[in-house]
Image (tube, rainbow, N blue to C red):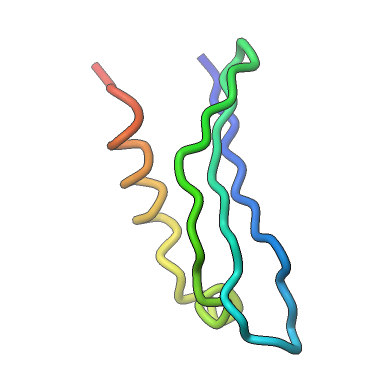
Length: 68
């Protein structure tokens, strides 16, 4: 099975620092799409590189997928 993970940030702006919407979803080889999480994140964390995306992704997959 192949998984394609997409992370989308809506309304990013270098000149403004308002929180932005983040959507994390995956699509499998059969074309089924599942939204793992939708939330609001501080834009500063994205631009500074301090957003813990790896930890975030691990949490998403741990909660959503069951591995043998």
